[in-house]
Length: 258
Length: 204
Image (cartoon, rainbow over the protein chains, first blue to last red):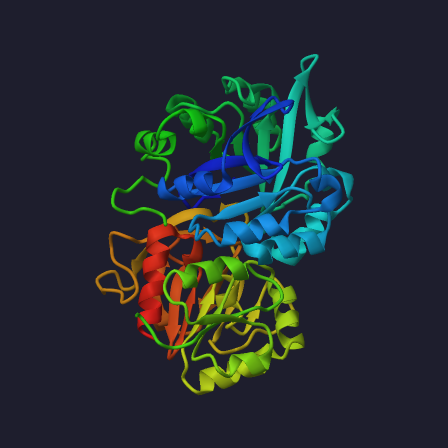
């Protein structure tokens, strides 16, 4: 049985492509929406519980994590917990990313391509400092993990077995088909059940309090990450927090983040 | 100015050094990141950041000779703040890394949270005993960010000044002499964390 001894979280997922913040649409199309500085400072001000920064620039596959970007972000005086993913392929990358100024690393493609990487990075940084990104799709009514780098799919339960048994980090479960669209809570039921022993962050199509509330009701969901909607809906984060005070840390006036 | 003392942020070779540096910079410009023992001598207050695993951090710390400098710093009663893993390293040993002793500056050991217990997120802390006023936090700004799978068990429970609301057995802040240890991350706890750091620096 999983027991949550902290507030459930309203997280923000910030996609970066070629050093600009973008909205993503089903992992296929991307639209620039603003500057990294403005986005992070606003999220900090709105007291979002934590921010996941995913750098999806194709360059990251060969160049590794963008430490210059992280150096820039560390100068912004953001006081909100940060997770960074993008190009992390070994332990040294993960250590360098944390030293550059984040609290957790996110492993995507490499978590499934490199045997034991999740376990090894967990041993180096502590499992609580590692998030595994697991995008999923339904193909022919079959649940499958989607790899955005290779654009290949694999059976979901096979992918789930790559995550060490008893592992105490979190999994970022991303609904590819709802990405940038209206979310559907039914899409998450089966993957959440298959990952019942793990802590999960849900992402994909979250734009209103009702859907976020349904998602946080899953026992093993510790957080919901809002993405595109925070750029188009004014004051989305504080409004969501106001609607979810029984589940997440409330937004407090006169307590700006920065 | 809250403090004129020079603050050193100890770079163990693992840890969110830049996160802590960024938070300290908002309060005082008189700080530096120190990764070598000779650089620590001139620091009148030290902060050990968190994020990492006990065994890796302990090995790196000793390899760099930073343990000796930390002992010297504490022997001079200079303020020392350990954050998360930084706090755990102050203790004698950890279940996370059998065979890797801690600094033994605080008596007690570090234990694994029970299986199934999740502590990645925000929790409210309260004074221990509950009626006491804490010198570092105010009651209306007491929610902090935690990210840990291990927790400290001090030999003397009287050194525990703050506990976690949801897990009262988990010390949130311990204090012994000039040493303060916090399980939460003040550098990432928004306004509450900023005020905590400012209050700690004020007392340096």
